[in-house]
Amino acid sequence: MILLTRTVLIVSDFTLAVVITTMNFQDGGMQKNPLFLNFLVVVALAVCIVRHINYYKITKKIY
Image 1 (cartoon, helix red, strand yellow):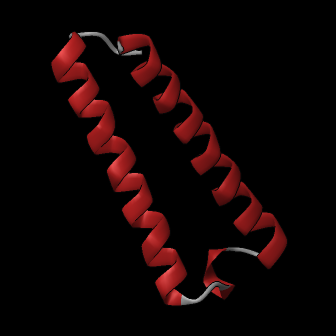
Image 2: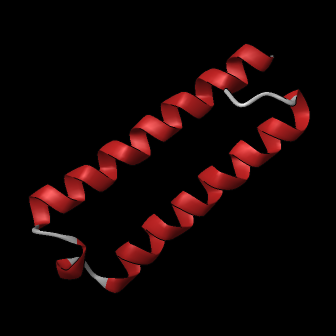
């Protein structure tokens, strides 16, 4: 169970990094994206941070 959770955390972090990088290079930066899309990226980052905090609370380890 813990290994699966750790793997999901790593995959979701990598996916978020790829999406943000692609948005910056393809569209010419975050300023040219619609405001709602930027808001969704911030929400995804916040969810990622919360998931890391919860993982730490459960395992007492930083993956």
